[in-house]
Length: 182
Image (cartoon, rainbow, N blue to C red):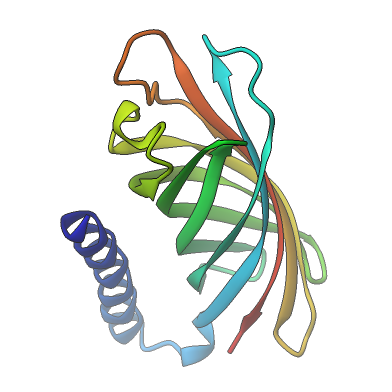
């Protein structure tokens, strides 16, 4: 588990370092990059060769950095700890979504992008039956107030088969949350 957390932290740190060096080369202002925190509710379940599972309610929490590429287009890598899975079969993940954000109106963005996730634990009944890595796509929308407060909703579509024991099992979830950009 330490390797997973260190890998996730390294990816996030490299993203920050790359963005900062790019900003220095462009001689742009610091307003092109903003940091933030976010948290919220996740409703998740499994799809595929599983039946009879009930959706699980969990929480997610983490940080983000928002890179403004121009007025309407931003890229937002995130590092999130998320409680997912199904009822009685909970899995915990360190998720790294990289969302492209397109602002269709003042403060309102549509978002989409890939996600990489590393298993960080879970219920004993399932954690050994699930692979250590997951990946998928996220789709959503968000609204940001001028004071830095933001709200978002996202659907996460798992693309990887996470089953270690045969058959196909994938993660799907819906997230709703709030955050703050500094």
